[in-house]
Length: 177
Image (cartoon, rainbow, N blue to C red; front, side):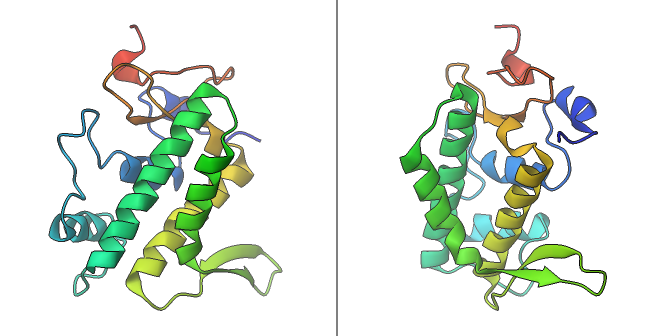
């Protein structure tokens, strides 16, 4: 069932709820690839801290930085698949592999409410878990497939298509073109 806030989110292309984190993460790379908020480890750590994903006293190692870029690229690739409304087993496999670092566990509380949480102790694995939970939550809400990549030449930015038809293939900046 689509998110009830989808129509409000669609007006400016912002994703609803936790999916907005996935959208922001995907958009850390500019449309032309010139500006990359995750380009170097220090910049990546700064962005992650600002997003509330990394404690102030933590950093990102070289291997974590490389994995972070692979995660972002795999998300962007899957969002392009959403836009084209096709299936791409390779893109799905790359995202699945990138999300595996999240080490998720199923949780059940006293009211028998089921959720997902990270079993990881390392900062990077916790970051991946937050992204994975956001994607899983959006998938359960029926909103994950509405997060897309703009097909306008030179764009590629992530946008949320909250229209009933979910047929948009361009972000708000390029919708008329």
